[in-house]
Length: 458
Image (cartoon, rainbow, N blue to C red; front, top):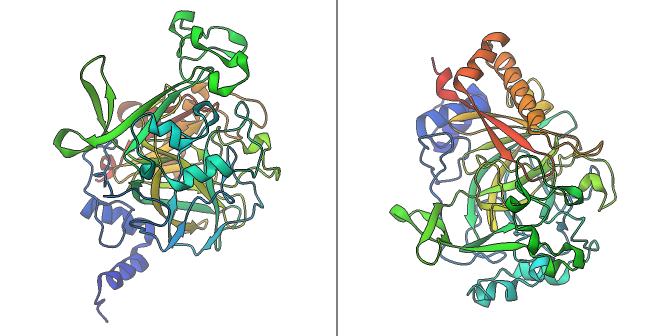
């Protein structure tokens, strides 16, 4: 019997023997690195399912093509290729082709700082917060200034800059696209958290009413500052909180906000892509309502689950030849719920491994062949959406619906992938699993479960 001589030979031999998914599980137990192995990079194991690997802050502004690029392929956010406010449809023209199992680095551009209510001029917007011109991303400047692929309508379009789609060889309808998060590098040392009228967890209801459970005085931003009647986004009265990055407690890269007239609040960065998806809707019109970037769907999209940082894996059912993967809505940090409307939004350079999983291969959870599913090195993450068709048949944002679907998907996983009796699995979820609100602000609301893998180690 020949003995593998190099680490890569050993890895390939183990993958052939165990299967890729079982190999990654074993690697997660031994090294704590989870599914996201990248060259010589190693990520320390998190102590809890909501912890994240240490964040790397590059020593420079990551302008397009500059600085570390970890993937085999590199996809910048060129103004003539990105979609602003809309996601690709089935049949969209890809901007990159790659083989299954290869890696790709994507330069995501945050929408915060370039939107119409902020002046659509990131140089001027960020200069008001002390950011020098050379620290503003050139691709953000170009998109704000030159984007003309579709005519922007601030009140209708999604806000997100969507990069892609990427065609993955061998992907067919009925497969699963496995997305492994390998690295997430902040491109700039700052972000923005924005609250916009009519949106967020404490927004005024459609038609100007007050949602159940709060009073008019408790609406945020305050009703008296609502300038939407002007028809000019620059006068809508929205609140954008500039959030610089510095090293906080124990040197951890952190977001910093003011606390009254003196003092600050600091919180650790946990970078992840809020938007990762595959083409789902078949409407080919670039600005079709079914392609709006705001609501998540069965194809993923604006899923906004803060566990999907480095080391995590996201599984999506495939609805189009080549899968047509896209990403965007890069977050530097986000709490469950994302209550004010946005997370700490900031441009990231993300590196992913994209792998096609076929039915019967054992390379993806069974639930993932019909619904988004995720996992971290510590936990399985079943997902529930209130309106998984992206509001094509009417908008439903009832968290109860999202919760029920997350529980059903958790039960299906435990029964079909872990061999549990369904009644016992139901009892287990009640006794030992957590169900968390992903977000309440994207029209379609989300809930995700957290099932600890250590409970299944015996």
